[in-house]
Image (cartoon, rainbow, N blue to C red; front, top):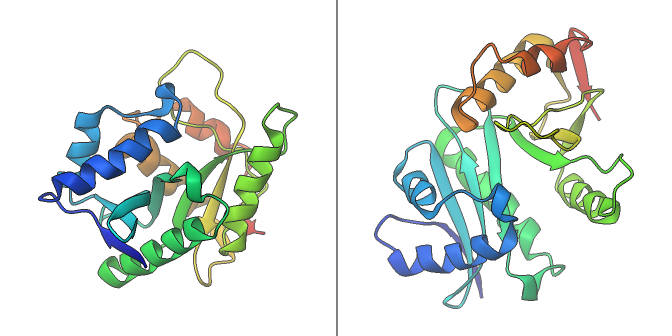
Length: 211
C-alpha cells in the first residue's frame, strides 16, 4: 500500500531511507550535504514528503514554502530506480502539492528543469521529464529563458521554469521578478540585484502567458 506523508524530525529511520534514494539520484555537483538536508528538515521553510510502500521509502520530494513569499518551489524529487515509470512519482508530487495547499494555501509551484529544446546527449530524458510535469498540469512561461542561480564560473545549462497552479494562465513581469529574486536570494544565496535576474527579464513582456 502506497502512503505519502511529511518526514518528521524524530523519524531518523525515515530520514536514512530518504537519504539513501537522494544520494543515488543526483550528480554529486547537484547534491547538498547531509547537514543541509537535516537543516531543511528542521526549517519551517521546507517540507520533505516521502512515499512508502509498506515500510520501505520509495520516493520523496522537497518543497520550499516560506510563508512570506508568493510562490512555492520544488527543490528535489526522486523515486527509487526500481519503481520508476509506474506512476508513483506523479502520485507523490500531486498528493504532496495538495497536502501543502491544505497547510499553507494555494500558490504557484515553480519547477526548474533542463530545457528539452537543446541538442544534448540526454535530450530524450529531458523531454520525458518535461512531459512528466506537463501530465500533472504544469505549464511553461512563454517565452522565457531561465538561468539557474548557481555560484559557479561554468556556463549553466539551458533551463526552463515550469509553473503548477490550478487556475493560473498568465503572470506579470513584476510578479515574475519577485519570484526570481526570492529563488536567487533564499535558495541560491545570491544578491537580490544579481545581474542574471535583469538579463532574464530584459526582453520579457509586461504579461507572460503560461502554455
